[in-house]
Structures are given as structure tokens and as C-alpha cells.
Length: 171
Image (cartoon, rainbow, N blue to C red; front, side, top):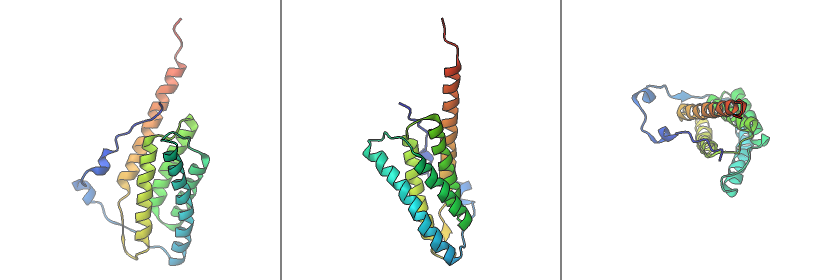
């Protein structure tokens, strides 16, 4: 079993005093650029959702493929170009996580599924908010921190496995 479990329970906690001190994110996008970004991002989000459905249909055991990585990569780039930094940052973090799973030859894990599901909801909220001039963008920082924590855990577990593999065998 190569599932890496990361405690993501903070997502259900009430915001702390420091969370409420954060300024609300506002995004102002040219309407033409917004229309292009919304259309293009939908294609990539659909690719990511197709992976989620495949994962569920396979009973939680399936390989991550390069198509998912490319979807996050392109979503990151287009969001960055459009100035939608929350989607750009979350997409970049998930692309890095997916690429690490691919590099280590690991199957998708429950942590990845949870992070992608949360990002999907977050992306939808952000896309709705950017359609309203001056609207606050939902906080994405907790999700980004959870992605970074999961990636760090994956790197740590991979390094431990490498050390174990490199240890000389007892004779």
C-alpha cells in the first residue's frame, strides 16, 4: 500500500485570528481576457474531473497520468497570464505533487484525491467570484499549505525509501 496519509483536518477548523487578519483577495480582469480564461480553464478542469471520476470508478486505485500533470501545468500558466493568482498557485502546487507521484512511480493516493476535490471546489468559487467586479476571492491559502505539506511528506517518504533501498544487505 503506497498511500501517504497527510492530516488535512485543518480544513474543517474555524478560521483563526490570523486568518481573519488576512486581506481579502480582489482580482480585476479585463472582460475579454476573463472570457478566454474561463473557457480555457473549463477544459483543463474537465480533464482533472475526468481523472477524479476514473479514480473513483477504479475503487481508489489508479495511476496518475501525464494528462493530469499537463492540465495543472496549463491551468497554472493561463491563470498566471490572466492574473488569477489563486488558481495559478494551487495548480502549480498540484502539478508538482502529481509530478512527484509520477517520478516515484506511485499510484494516486487518497491525499491527492482530497486535494484535487478541494481545489475543484475552490476553482469553481474563484471562477464565480471573478465574474463579479470587485468581488472577494475565497481564501485559497489553507489549501495551498495543505498541498505543500502533502508534497513535503511525499518527498520525505521517498527519501526514506531511497535510503532503505541503498542500505547494504546483511549477510
